[in-house]
Length: 396
Image (cartoon, rainbow, N blue to C red; front, top):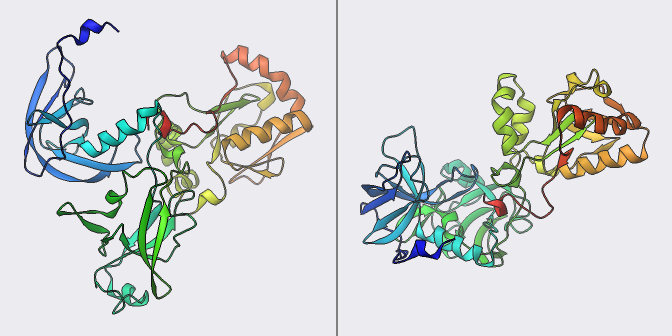
């Protein structure tokens, strides 16, 4: 807060994306310490890769062989006195494999937060499959019909609410994006190098136009899409700025099966062979679980009380319905439970893998609320993320 802190300081300027095999200096405080550390190396790779902070988003990265360790994160990497990256992660399985956030991603972030809020990235929203198999290309009718014999990837899944939703179709062959031909492995020529085609559109803003060419039902078609964001997979994005979502009814703790909960219970469920939960979470898009619910809801634990006697058999089970109403997400579950508590004599919950339901008497659950709060020191019986506030908007 003291303006004297910045006296005589000189801000560093952002530079261009560096070329491969050019030198960089990484500045920071690895493993703590009071004095600045400078390590040197070269840019060894450029491309799209997973950002470990959110554990689900992939954006452009720069790989460098300069030493990067815990404590370097957030520090600049310099080339010719200008910032060409920000250190943010390393690959522990390898040697001298550190990663920088490159200038295009930094610039996009600064533009995004210009209004004081981070909104996040658009989603093109397709899952694709290479068409390197000649038999597959013949079956798709590509041989002899498409000008380039090595063009196109097959779309097999589309993310709800994304740019492609409602425009592209499963079974389309994506031939080009914004005028760049896509190879049979999904690469385009970009800035003199081969790069994943999504790199062309990753930094686009909502409402920008994306022009694609597809091979559909034996014909080449040119289609224009509107770049859009989607909240469809927000629950898979790590959350750092808000408490985990939960609701306690009758001492039973219910939670959405999101990235935070998987951190806590994932290994336990894997040891217990809970393939139902792991499969639905991991294949939420490919298996089209999203058509059933926005996120699965689980009875994560039981706070022992007389009102929930014999309910331990339902612990760790996914909830399918409340009083016959299918659960469409966590907020929907809480709303249905509240409504049943106020308007029905009993609350009947059904779970996957259980033929018998869990039945609770509404009056008993209401009466137990304050007793359970005192016994277990609960300041609140629920926390739901405010509507419209995505995890991306919270720093994902």
